[in-house]
Length: 233
Image 1 (tube, rainbow, N blue to C red):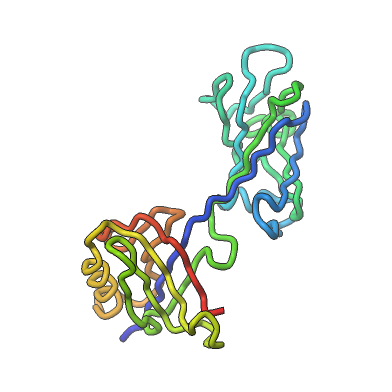
Image 2: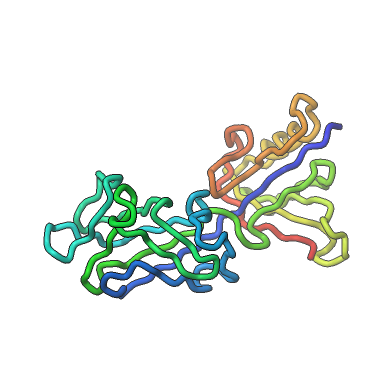
């Protein structure tokens, strides 16, 4: 059998809302309420924003023409007063530890955002959009597949030989997923075809990715979520 690698990603909601913001604030401090530990990133770059790992969204734009309003770069043509705004990654810098700085329009006339001079109008939410912690995702060899067990009518556990084989966690790696009720047989058929059909060539195959809403076989099984990923250690 040609080796294949099966990929699973469980989406965990992670966001940090910074409210009661200061006037004219351009630098925000990430805390472990977002994720622990915080990502290292590459100091003084926009890498973690440019690759889509984290987004930054202003929550209450002030664009009524008054002196204390936000000033936006030319890129933001659809922004409206009292609306929200996802800041373009090109206007963001991360220090590699905890500080995120938003470039002003003076620094970047296209993507910059000069925040309001009024306290509370610069509230922002940072959201993580990719797996970042243990248990968020799993890549397993198809040859390590052990079997599938029905938990109930719309939930099943997929078992693999363990990565470490250290005897912990009952000696298996397990992915629990939810799907359309009654589709256990369809799930089994899909996994069997993926593993045994040589027309499915070697390489990485996404079985279920909650973050990107990508599922095997155009999701004919009706997978709605990965509930958990449990490793043997």
